[in-house]
Length: 229
Picture 1 (tube, rainbow, N blue to C red):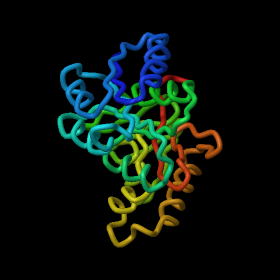
Picture 2: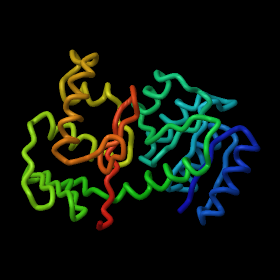
Picture 3: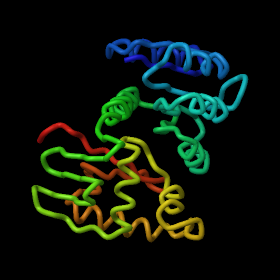
């Protein structure tokens, strides 16, 4: 698998190159936004690690231009820690956000998640089956250990929206706007209640989630694996 690193710090590029190469990833690097955008097209990476503090442009602009060309999973790696910055970047299409300084093991885990979940779901029909949980969009049915699980319209809508971006953090604002409408962007309690009910019905533990993971104050992601248990 090929990973493109876009970061202006030579030590970060070197450290990541060595760490990723040791895991058998092919690594390409770019020290600024323009070179990164060019490499995202020419090198056709499977995943991009993007710093926001680039010397020639803001990383969010580079993210926008990269994703305008075609979708590729982008993990943002930045010293910016504000919730607003994270939410804005994720809403623009980044699949994940990791703060500097960072643990390389955590970053590797997030890379595995981003790449392993990309093939979980068929977008034509969005069918998920891990021999424990089965979700079929066409029939609007959910089964847990072969037992039918009844979901409300809102529960179904939130679950399918999360599954449509497997492994990717979906912000609270996006979910509220898409499921409840623009007038409910501040009604985060609605969303928390739906996630709580989904976890109860799917027997998913919030402390050690199998399907629905929370990034406190930011959003949620579907993390299910197709591997048999």
